[in-house]
Image (cartoon, rainbow over all chains, first blue to last red; front, side):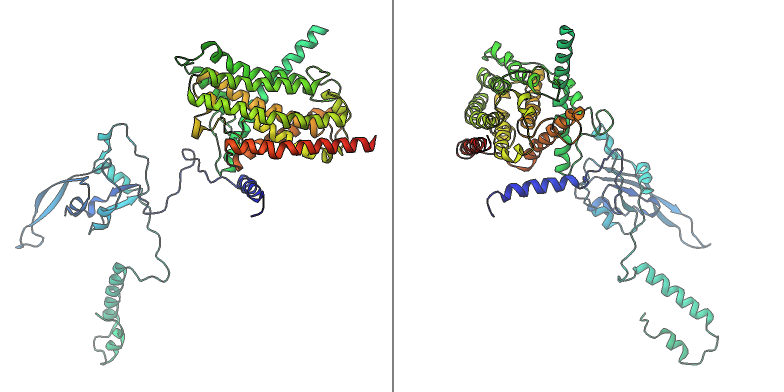
Length: 193
Length: 319
């Protein structure tokens, strides 16, 4: 470092920064476009909820409140047994306690909880931050579509299962009733069950 | 005719005094922001925050004007005015364009301007002493030390131009200006401008203010409108120092365009120098109080003396 090069460098850096566009986002005027799964708020798709209570139990700060009752469903077929079913009465998340860890979303076995990028839900009273199922359902509609998988990635499990089932039925329908031995085996080769 | 003329000139100078510092302040907001990758004020006034300083002024006017107990009340209250008014007075003598486009032609212009500029610093000294606060006191003392150190190179550099032009009058200097004076007096220009920035306590010479160590120095106890006056004095000072540097070293109204547009050249040169002042603030860190002293005595004073010697030699050779 020769004498004065630091001073010149300071001038150069600041001048270059001035000629570039500022990185500032003018927030209230221009809303940010947030990627899917941004941890803004948690939406509830209550049709998928079976009141298994896993989310409420896994929540590190116990901010999920769930009430439910059991209903008896008449037998599906005559002579069958009556089944009981959980009905959701209340699902509320206290966002003044929530620390956005996302464990509830991860742990839900039936895909009833989703991250929504919605973030403008400030309230003037801390008690109003406990949001009930109606609000959580509204947020559900703001959940964006998940991004497509990587081209080289493994197919989603659900897709694999569905495809196999479809292929099997297609093979059964198209196969002649009396197939020469060997043909059917060749179709299924390389597809472990 | 006389009364009208004087009134017109006084009003024009006052308008320049009230508008130009605000323009510099706004430019500082925006330039500083963009140099730091931000956008600065964007909302006040609607378009890119142009009215930010107006809003600031309204805010300052609404604040309570406090005087600490134990402060020297009269001196404390008088200090902002003492800091501010000299810059207004200096503006009277700075020529804007050829043909009498100046508040008042002062025969000993350079002498007058430099003498009055020194008074402005006195306001900070008064504020620092009268506040009855150790930080203010420290700030005031550093201000005084800095004034002592930088007044000398400032005057020596100005003296070099005076020697070159053979006159103390600012308009006289501009009348005699030749383009080759710029390279001839370049070292003097550097010394004058740097010493001017130091006298204004602008970064990197802002140890007397240093918010992080002595809490704004002499301004610690000031609030409301009086604090705003000190800030205004700082920006008026930037305008005055830049304008003086433009007049003394860069030929003021001289430029490629006809003389009618001389005022434009003068304003452009002043604006460019103001930009340099702002740029220095963004780019460079603050010097320590002792480094500031060392820089004045071991760099600027010898440089100014060398410039005077060079001016003398060239003057003798060409005459």
